[in-house]
Amino acid sequence: MSGQPIALVNARLVDPERETIARGGLLVRDGVIAAVGSAVTRDQAPEGARVIDCGGDVVAPGLVDMRAFVGEPGAEHRETIASASMAAAAGGVTSVLVRPDTQPPVDDPAVVDFILRRARDDAKIRIFPSAALTKGLEGREIAEIGLLSEAGAIAFSDGQHTIAEAQTMRRALTYARDFDALVAPVCEDRSLRGEGVMAEGLRASWLGLPGVPREAETIALDRDLRLVALTGARYHAQMISNRLSVEAMRRARHDGLSVTCGVTINHLSLNELDVGDYRTFLKLSPPLRGEDERMALVEALNEGVIDVICSDHDPQDVETKRLPFAEAAAGAIGVETMLSASLRLVAAGHISLPRLIRAMTLRPAEILRLPVGRLAVGAPADVIRFDPDEPYVLDPADLHSRCRNTPFDAARLEGRVKLTLVAGRVAYE
Image 1 (cartoon, rainbow, N blue to C red):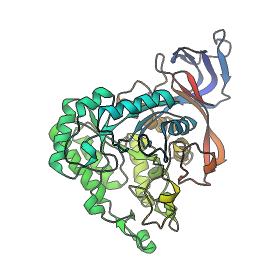
Image 2: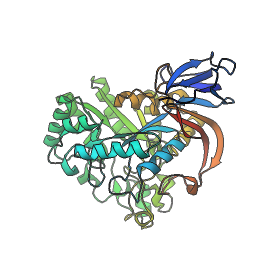
Image 3: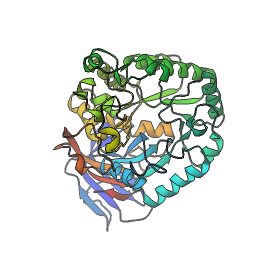
Image 4: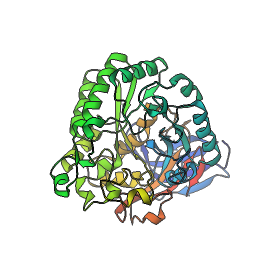
């Protein structure tokens, strides 16, 4: 892409490949990174370039979010590609993998093409479709994975659902392997979850709510990992939320399986006590768990057992959230607050800033086989500038999503995004 060159100088450059922080600058020209490092200064900027003095702010690759719901087609009242991309850009997210559980679901190449065309027309960032693993998301007949891949789908899942039948899942993994396609499901045994709406335990009992055992997630994950060993498919567990699942992933890695997993920013930064007295904006799937489980996830992220942080952006309107807790829809928006919420981990000393940025840039880009997520000469100029120490109180009215169901309502956060570039063009400032 053409456009005015942009030089970001006097910055702290976070390199997720080397996991380093260094003083320097970055030059963007023709949609790619033309230079990066200490040699990029105001004096060395090319003639006609826009020079931005970052004043010590962080410059990093744009974030890559591997799980977000966008309502097009069929649920535009919850979110559109335009509103989701504006929220993402304001939060420093430059690439988003969108869920396939729309209406109609993304189980036909024509729907993939529709999403890509709307993204080209309306999106400020890069939108990548994921497609259904089974037709109609019904868990019975395998979708046309080859045709969907050719149309532009880069991952496959059944949205919020896990394929219940092991034989169907085996066939789906085998079919996906033949096309070198990424299978990225949510792991949950629905029969074991039952009517549960909160993490099983003492807190749920106090609130009088039915609980969801950890095993509902881990049993489904264990089954999938064994089927991956059987089929050799590419596999990414989108969200794990407890210590048992961490141990399952650690064993799979030890056994040599090439599998990856993610965790939501909500499960890294919140626990079941934040639900308080039936706060439905904190009703999530999987549910928030105890503080010991949260810390197990943080340690697994630091260790590298967990690869990716995602937002699990899930807009829900007032009619589905302003209900008794057990009846309210699960889900929370998060693409705009993912960076600020994750910086809590850095401030608490649980993880370094480069390791954190790696989990939201380079690792998801590698798993999805995208060329983004790097601060390197020749890489796409998807770049963000933010001040990790600037405090603010979150006002939901300031968010760009069509819905306001944020778990961080009135929370004290740090980390303001000041500039988002996508292919060298300003998407947010």
